[in-house]
Image (cartoon, rainbow, N blue to C red; front, side, top):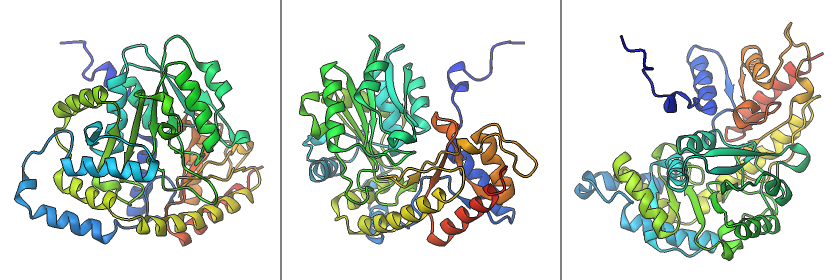
Length: 402
């Protein structure tokens, strides 16, 4: 009998998505009749706007969309994404520099798979989204963490990045607004980081999927626009999931220099062929339309953001900086680790999150999933009443910690 492992070492090393796992557990408990409130999934609670749905219905009736289409995306959608990028970011690209992908996650993987050779290092600011490490690992790259905390609002400085840079560093991953923290770099900070990357000949992969979800007087700044001297060493990742409440439609894109886009398209041609045509036509309606539906969602998220941060900061032992973008709060719970709670002493934020789910029926994602133990991520992309009820349960339970 063969002693070889049944599953490859490469794939065995991949961790399950922690955010999806927490969401799945919460939904299973709900299905079993428990009144769980889930703060785990990064998913707008709004339906996809009606005009987008109607575009998909019309596309489903069109015979030409029942067939294969170009692996790189429908030409009209690539054109529309190029136009939308100029409109929203001031960054001019040709449609040929756009690759339409099966959601933002495929764009993340294909960017790293195209840029990295084994041993190449990627600077990743922690806390980070759970998919980035796995995509870097699958591409043969080495992730180098640049750890931030609540004292700086989870923002990395040029000095921190420079301290982490080595002769093997090839890519800086730049994410603003950030998942999981909601941190947003100012235009000045963005420009300084971009100039540093350009000075050292680094590639910048920038995930801009939360570009329209910023609050107050906070500005979104694309690093590609802010630092023209980066030239053709920028890859932009984006998609329709968050902005247009289209997480289930699975349409994202990668924008980059022609050689990178051509190589990534070759990869996609073998991995998945084209993105589903009906979804592509829905995305075309989304990116070609105005942003009025987006603005209504943003206003609701802003209201919920303020409520959640206020309530979290009223809990003894919890400190939550104000997120400036996305739809997540990332409070520190370090003061609660090791305290007695319902006869137990959680030794980590992961154990504390498990206790909270069991005792308060509230699902949060522990900071271990994002590279920084001692924190929770809570999404405020859920209804106002559920948000208040969920944080109230959290406050009531954590008040018992001794």
